[in-house]
Length: 364
Ligand SMILES: Nc1ncnc2c1ncn2[C@@H]1O[C@H](COP(=O)(O)OP(=O)(O)OP(=O)(O)O)[C@@H](O)[C@H]1O
Ligand SMILES: [Mg+2]
Image: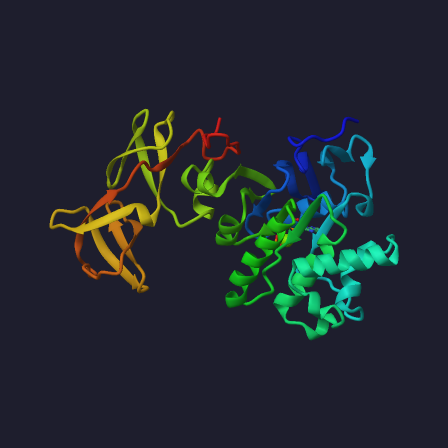
């Protein structure tokens, strides 16, 4: 086998498939993770995220498909490299620290094959990376949630794995701590130039932390893209609605890049083929102005200080949301004109169910 070069992905899954009885938990998943990147697997509960991680870690055998780590085949074609020989670190949702072992012994757990001196050096380096060098003698039970999270990360980093897998790593932390800890974890992974894949069902977490986000639903990957592409050029309607706030209107094709909707004719971000179209409107792209002959009526208003969310009913009974600045100049019952900034994301009937790729965000 030729040695991996810098273009070899740290992880490549091809047509990975797993069934639990009648449940198709993971359905022909293709995933390529560049070296040194932080990739999120994002999707609703039960969509197959943990099952993908377990297969990559070698804890579960797929029914079909291949897994390569750093260019080496570890699963598929009759190969099944055991977990301990994959050079993959894992951080579980509950951290799974050994309660009776000190922090330092937890971190050194995967280094038992090393001579004592080198092991101590690696433990010290890993603890220092997570800012826990002074707490090596503590028991995990005497640590805060955020500190336990860091110990779990140090334990995964210590053997210098090719890949770290993190399953919902922040879900045990309260909201206030979560934002701080996830920024910290990102900085630690970056400092170690560590390739990592983390699982989350929180779209904000995925968008704000990851270089690449793979959006999953019902065992399938709908799109893998950087956060901005995912948000502005969703490949499927599922991605459009799962990532960010989105309201949906029906439309009729009025041209290759034009659609007629209950709020007028709008330019689309992609070419339309079929006559029936679904249009996605993001609240931040919808501007409202009071107007006696406007087509919308304000039905609700939530004021947040930094901004406000106004709901508007439009012809056909559809409801759209508009996120606008803090100035209060509309009231329930006001008639408003609507203007959508830029092009709208639109799916014609031929693209709605397809899964997809990508590269330019347009389903084939
Ligand atoms: N050991 C198992 N036996 C039977 N079915 C399972 C098993 N593990 C998972 N499943 C099913 O496989 C599907 C995918 O589960 P998985 O745990 O991968 O989802 P997930 O995306 O990680 O969800 P969550 O966000 O809730 O953790 C679900 O329908 C789940 O019920
Ligand atoms: Mg899970």
